[in-house]
Image 1 (cartoon, rainbow, N blue to C red):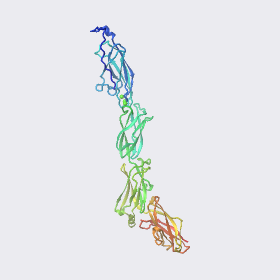
Image 2: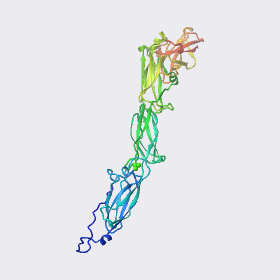
Image 3: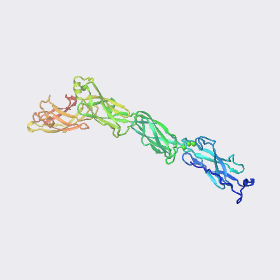
Image 4: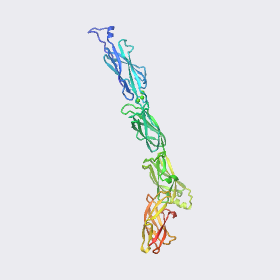
Length: 496
Ligand SMILES: [Ca+2]
Ligand SMILES: [Ca+2]
Ligand SMILES: [Ca+2]
C-alpha cells in the first residue's frame, strides 16, 4: 500500500531577529502562498498487478500548502476498482501538505478483479480544504486522468465425451473482453468432481490462446473440471474459476474372434483350451482404445449341475495389453460331452463374461462344449508298413486342432489308432506314449498355442509283402470318451 505524506507545516517564519509578530500583516500573507498543480506521472495501471497509477502534486509557491485530493470515478468503480476507503465509497478525501518548491507523489490503489472488461478511467482532483484560508493556496491545475488496463481473460471450452480409462487432449481458450485470444496465460486445474480426472493439469496458452489439458474418464456419467487462469510470478488470478462438464462413458467391448462376436458364443473343446480375448474400443466404436493396464475381470455363470456345465475358465489376464486386449483360456467339459452323447439336449448352460471394472460393464458369451476338428497329416504322405519279421517303419504324424469356430486348441493330447474293420491286421501303429506294438495307439504330446502338434509313430503289419491297401487312421482327443468320425483321417498304408 502506498503511504501518503501527512506533515505538519513548519513554524511560521518570523519577520526579524527578536521581533515577534503577534499578528501577521495581510501583505505578508499575500506574499507567502502555495501554488499547487497535479500531473499524472504514471497514468496507466494494470489491475492484475501491484502496479499503481502515480500522480505528482507540485507546489511552485513559497509556502507550504494544504490540499485535499479525491479520486473521481470515470468508468472505473470506486467500490471494485479504486477502493481508497472501501467502507465509504465515493465520499472520502485525503488531505496532505505540499512543501514550498517541492512535490508529493500519490498512488491510488488499484484493485484486481477477475472480470474481463474494457479499459477503465478515473481522475484525481485537487481542492483547497474549506477550513484553510482563501488566498493561501492557489490551484493552477487541479485534475489529472488515469486509466486502468484490464488483465482478465475468460476460459472457453466445450464439453467432451471420454471413454472411461481413456485420456484425451482437451483444448480450452483464453479470450479477453473483446473475444480476442490471449497468449502466455498459465491455466491450471483448480478442482473437479465426478468420474472425470485430469492428466497434465496445467498449460500455458499458445499463440492462439489455447491451453491443452489431459482429461481422463474414470467411470460412468458426468463430471466436471474447474480451471482458472493465473499470472505466474504476480499476485492475482486472471480469471474466475470456470467449470467444464465432461462425460465419461463405458467402452465398447468386442470379442477378438469374429465368429465369437457374431454368434456371441464360444465353442470350448472337450480337451485342451482355446484362447479368447476381449478388446476395448472407444465409447462410440470409432477406434480401438489402445490403452494397457485396464482391468478386466473374468468369470463364468453356470446353470444346471456340475455335469451340465459347458466349460470352465483357465488362466486369464486381468489387465489389458497395449492394444487394450485381455485374454483368457476356456476349456470344455468332457463330462458334458458324455452326457450329450446320451442326451443331446443338455439342460445346463454356461455363460462366460468379461467385466470392465471401471464402469462395471459386462461382455457375455454363451459357452458350448464341442469336439474339436482334428486335421491329422502323415509326414511322409503315406505310411509304409513292414512285415513284423522286418521290424517296423518310422513315420511322423502331425495335426492341427481347432474348434469349429476356428480357434486353435492348445494343450490337447491326441490318440491315433487304426480302424481295421475292412483290412484285418493290415497295420498297427504305436509309439512309446501309447505302449508297445500290440497297443495300436499313438499318443501325441500336447498341442501348442497354435493348435499344432507333431509326434512320431511306428507302423507294422501282418499283411504279405507287396500289399497295397487302405487303412483308416482315427485321431481323437485323449480325454474324449468316444470316437468321432468327424475326427477321422484316412490314410493309405503300403506294405513293402
Ligand atoms: Ca484482473
Ligand atoms: Ca476492473
Ligand atoms: Ca478486470
